[in-house]
Length: 45
Image (cartoon, rainbow, N blue to C red; front, side, top):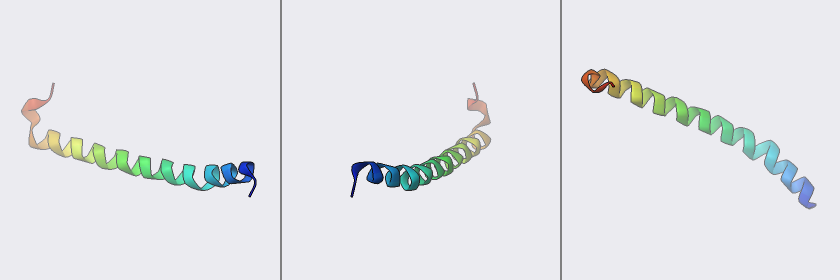
C-alpha cells in the first residue's frame, strides 16, 4: 500500500471519529461541570 493512500485512509476514517469522540467527551465534561455547580453553588467564583 502506498504511504499516501495510507495517510488518506487514516485522515478520512480516524480524524472524523476522533472529532466526534472529542465532541462527545467535551459534552460529558460540560455536564459534569454544570452538575457540580448545581450541587455546590457557593463555590462559584
